[in-house]
Image 1 (tube, rainbow, N blue to C red):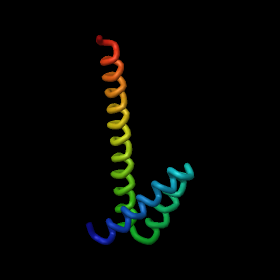
Image 2: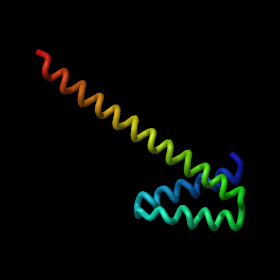
Image 3: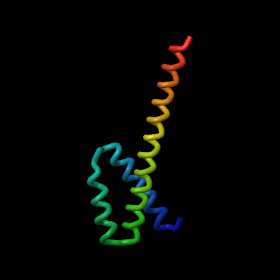
Image 4: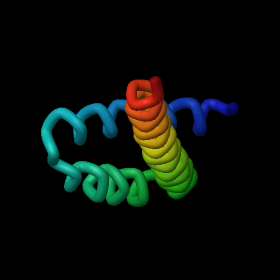
Amino acid sequence: MGVTEDLADELALDVIKYVDATGDDSIISDIVKLLGATSQTAEEAFLTSMRVRRANIAARKLLLDRAKAFKAKAESGSGSAG
């Protein structure tokens, strides 16, 4: 990645950590406004990174939930046979 994407991705990761810790997602719009006023390129890179990271987090959660459900079903099924 280029410097713009690298910096935007690092910022997005820090913002996600902040939001997870505080529940304050208004920081996202504040940062978007700041970036948009100073660098449209940085704003777009940040928004893209946020979308990609949040989508990845949601997909990983779905996968983990399905794996847990499968494991629970397999364990309950193997205990009843016998």
